[in-house]
Length: 282
Image (cartoon, rainbow, N blue to C red; front, side):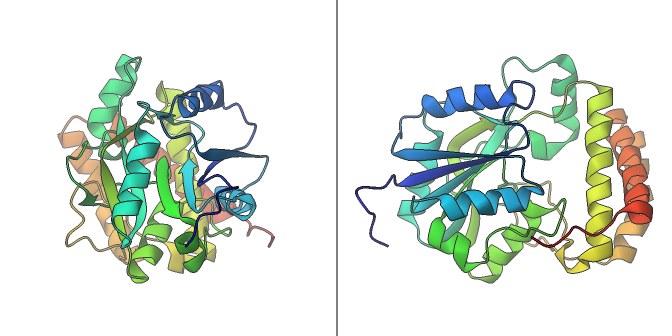
């Protein structure tokens, strides 16, 4: 693809319901302004739900040949993140999704630091080489715009599970999903019990919605760095039987945040399965 010199090379897409997120969005935008790579345009997509629809709207308006998607409650950890993501895509055309590792921000509370030890996806290893991994996610990830469109963009009919769904479709199309060396973002878990449990209740609701209306979109998420041997698809029966074992393991390991989060997730799942209504088509 030939880059149009009159257009920015990179389009940054931030889906955000209110464009503020309790002060997270202004902090994120400040970290974007400090990036060494500034050949960018910015699309903050407000008031659009679900998230997949918001991202697709940003991608439709984007002029850049590369798309970078950021969660509105994340923050770039240093000024080189964009530069590192773009270098990875430029260096290997087989990469379909280039992601950044999630590390704790220096101002993280004691609660968030403890939570990071119990939820590995929110405290991911920083790699020294390009690494195929299921830990790449929408917190901060980059795609070639043509690849994003080739695989159909984001799904707009699910409330949760964009990350595993997109990773699966990219791999099926023959592309790699990787973490990029020394690319880091801050994306901590919510601070405090109430917010943590609310997040997992919402996640459980979204999972139940997907299981009811789009069961083909339900995939596993992996908590290990290496994705070799990982199976993205498992049966509902397997997941139901595994759930009490996960609860027991959390309790035996004295991981009470994880135990409580699983319980909240289960409540949200039950509520979603009983009450969720299918989203209207766009």
